[in-house]
Image (tube, rainbow, N blue to C red; front, side, top):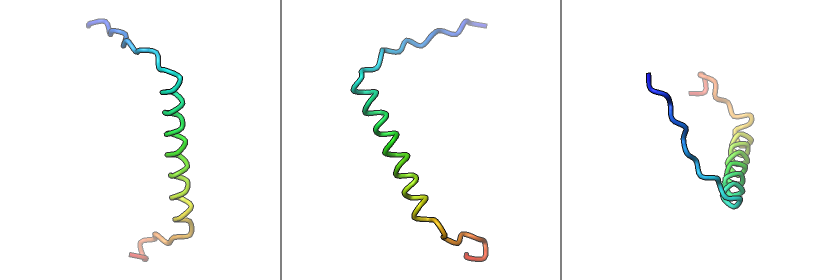
Length: 48
């Protein structure tokens, strides 16, 4: 069995890390906002 090679990953720049974290935070906030819009919505089988 061949030995797995280590992936060579270039160190991420500080700006890239900040942008990625801000994008993830915005996505999480959007997800929570959409969930809050559906609060109380009746999705039971009888509704359809």
